[in-house]
Amino acid sequence: MSPGRVPALAAALAACLALPAPARAEAEHAPLDRAYERDEGRDRHWLLPDHLTAQFAGNVGLLAVGGGHAWRDDRVVGDLLFGWVPESVGGTDIYQLSAKVTWSPWIFRLGQGWKARPFTVGLQVTYLLGGDYFIVQPSRYPSGYYPVPTALHPGLTLGTSLTVPKRYLDAPVSLYVEGVALGHMLRVWAANPRTIGPADVFSFTAGARVQL
Image 1 (spheres, rainbow, N blue to C red):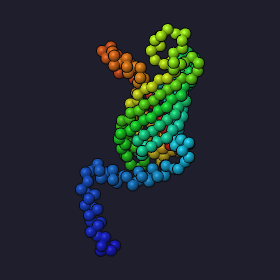
Image 2: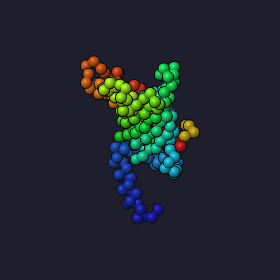
Image 3: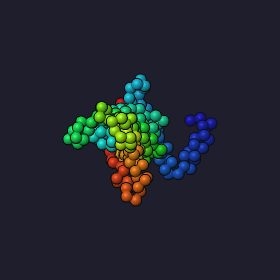
Image 4: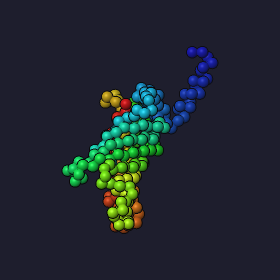
């Protein structure tokens, strides 16, 4: 080692030791985490998804599958899902398309590819397929008979997520749980806060995103 590098190394060591313990831990894990992320992230055509998604319930179908993309260091995740409600549950087979965008304000890298998102918030829009549902109320119904479209349902999601690195599975998998509230239910809640509570407004869902 050349003598000229000694002062620079000493200064770097002093700066590292001056960091608080959590910051030092994050700094120690960062190179390894970045290595996992570089290994996990592969260039692909923009039309191809970078992850596949499966979700149970949550107003997108009893079971929904699809895929999507992540942006901004995985803080923003978009999904396009095809959902199905079987006749045994919905009275008739119901098919629907849903688009979701989820934002994670904080991502904690726990080392070796583990990542926790303690809080996520998102928006989703679901469109029910078939001639029995509509966006504009048909003229055969009296004006105002349906206060909201029966085919289009926006919603709000609140949740949390944990990413399991591919060293434990064949690919990195993000497991998530969410509470989902449809827009018209939020309006009803706001108008009747004394008689309607969060349990009446939010339904719960669980899902997984598998990184490709």
